[in-house]
Image (cartoon, rainbow, N blue to C red):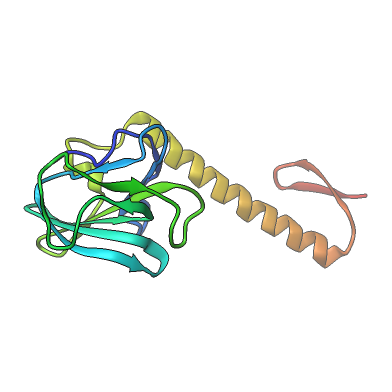
Length: 164
């Protein structure tokens, strides 16, 4: 099995999110990660324009497509162009959302099935995303304190504040 694109990963698996998002630049084409059959081709809620590819590994779900290059019930070969990444459904910009449900029903992080684990860059992105989440929580906490005091605060250091 191969990845559906060689573009950079913009979001990786975390918590219950067992999928991966790829940036649409530089190549917006989506390639079949393995041979199989197109069992869904249409638009569906948050996913927008969506394809299901049933292969030997399981069901591949591709979301947010701007264009389909395949038909429903069409057999495809590995590497065949399935469509083009887009910005349909609930999306913040053009990208590909790829999810994989194995034949046993288990949802897995798709890149783990194409020959490896996360790269160091992907691990760093996850670490940075976690830090951003922590910072957002700290900002919310500070906003709550400010609202409670109804007075402006001067932040001296993490966890240390001074009322002006």
